[in-house]
Image (cartoon, helix red, strand yellow):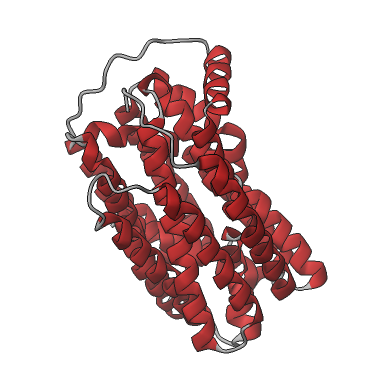
Length: 383
């Protein structure tokens, strides 16, 4: 329920920005603003996850996200909303997510009794996220066309009641975490990650995908309105196609047998996403673009979920929160750099040329990065 609201808010915010300004550049700016705090502050969120109770941190961050959604709804429904309001609200949500995401990722292992089931658990978590990604944008497109963006924000705020109830019901025993100075904790986590070749390679691959491929999401309003001459419902349809592919990627990983190797999959699925982006950049046919978005969604999520699983299996427990914060930074935090570049370059040279370049760069570099991951890494004894 909560994730349906989250996807509704994301689609409604993008449409609202484009409706108010008609600017591809400002679409990139808002996307940048929502995720740059993750790039800058996720490592601190990782230290907090290794230092404080992750369960309580999640309850706090979800409550703050609920208040952010209600504030956004109030501004929009009162017809007071301006672009700078959306930028500020996007930054605020990014700061919340900088703490929420590492805590959430590092809590997963304590909810799974058998470690060999962890890959399937992570894939099921991705499955839930992407099933709602299929539904949320479609609902948002319908609601925006019927009653406006403000009600999407309001429903998102109400949806947090479900996740807060669920978190309150969870009973989990987390080992005592030794307090340590934030600066020292940051340094230790960074040295551990840089010194671990497979983890370093996986993070670089995810960061590449986030900069060159994932920014297609913030440019979807341009395609919906300018290329396909549609409205908010067209945007919802395009986003739903991407969500359908992501759902298939999650199902693919969730259905794998426990213990099956993942190292060889990550580069292939990344190249699937890049190839689909190249096709999408050329396409002026709605049906072909929808198909490309399905393949793109599959590739991005399959790569991210497999990378998450591999890192969780390699990392030592005492570094888990900090390493997962770097995963968050690579997957979510690097996306604003890509969004800002895509919005800026798209403004000057055109959106199709921008997406084409990103796809070609990923096709070339993903295979090279895969060699640093290798198949010889072994899971940590504590993982």
